[in-house]
Image (cartoon, rainbow, N blue to C red; front, side):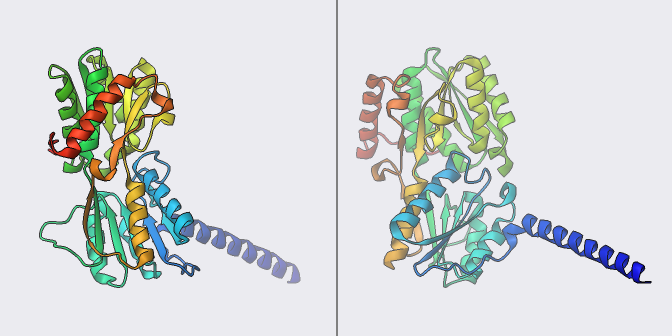
Length: 348
C-alpha cells in the first residue's frame, strides 16, 4: 500500500505540474485582456495599445513607440504598452489600462475610435487619445478624449512630386492597405503631387482589401506592386503598413524604386527606398504626454500638417543618390507653397 501511495503521489504531482503549465500557457495567450498591474511610478502614467503590425512594423506603430519612449526619457513618466495579437482585443486592452489607473491611454489607429468613445464615458477620470481618431456618426466632442489627426495628403503631395520629377517611364504606382477615407487621403495627395509636376504621368492605384488585415499582408502587397511594375510603373508609393513590405520586396526583385510611409523606411530596403513620407505620430504622442505632465491636457480634435512639421519627407545622406538636389529644391518650393496656401492639396 505504501508503494501505491508513492505512485499516486507522484502521479498527482505530475498532474499538478501539467495543470500549472497549461494555466501559464493560457495566461500568456490571454495576456492582452489581463488587468495590468498598477504601475509603480510617482509621475504620470501613460499606456499605449498598438494596432495591426505591432510596434516593430517599421512604420505607423513604430512611430508611436518612439514617441512614448521619448516621453518616458524626457518627461520621466511611467509607460506601459500592450500589443494585441493581430490587432484583436483592442477594447479589452484599453479597458485594462484604464481600470489599472493609467492617467493617459492611447490607441494607435482609426479602428480604435468607437472603443475610445465608449471607454471615455465609462472612465471620465482617465484621458484617452486616439491616433487617427475618426469620430463616429453623431458623436460630438468628448471632454476626456483627444483626437489626433494628420494632413497626410500634404505630405503625400510632396512625395508624389518626387515621383513625378523622378520617373523615367512617366508611369508610377500607389498601393494602399484598407480601402477607407484615411488611406484615400494618401492616394489623393500623391496623385495631385505627381500631376502637378508631370501632367502627362499615369498613376496606377490598388488596395489590399476592405478589412484591417489589409494592413498586414506582405504577400498581397508584393503581388499588387509586381503587377504595377509589370505595367510600366517605375516608382511605387505605399500606405499599407506591413503590407508595404511586399511592395519593397517587389521593388527589390525587379530593381525598381519605392517610397515608404509614416517612418523613414530606408533601412527596410536600402536598394530601393528613395524617400519616405513621414507622419510624425511620435511628435503627436510626445505633445499629449507633455500636456499631461503640465496638467493642461484637454479633449478635442487636433490636426498636424506641413505647417506644424506633422508630415514631411525624408532627405538625408542615405537617399542622396536616389534623390538629386534639384528635385529636393523643387519639392521644398512646393512645400512652401502649400504652407502659404498658394497650393491647396485635395484630401479625397
